Amino acid sequence: MMPGPLIFVYNADSGLAAALFDSAHKLLSPQTYACNLCALTHGLAGPKKQWSAFLKTLSEPPGFLHRDEFLKLHPGFLQTTLPAIFQIRDGNMEVLTDGQRLATLDSMQKLIALLPKG
Image (cartoon, rainbow, N blue to C red; front, side):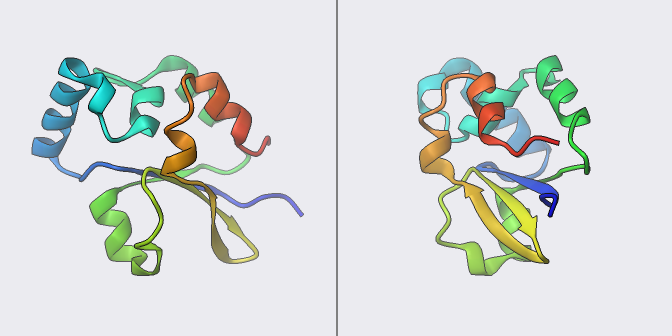
């Protein structure tokens, strides 16, 4: 059976003020920035070209949520360390990788290698 869609959850809240704060934090103090998923896949102006190109290779469009949006929709995952990547399998959402694992990655290539192909 083919894997279902991926859901990427950032360890950042939604909204313009949060986005501006996160961009400043990423620029001024990248070593303490709490969302390695964002740090690996986004620059200051938005998604990195290589990341956008990779996402186009997926068989199904992925979902993207911020921490506040995700926790409202899925309160049962409160214990999951964010950021995290989830996968829908047989109608169930499963943790593919969590914030602890994502924090160990130092390149987008290593992130992509963790994800299902196709």
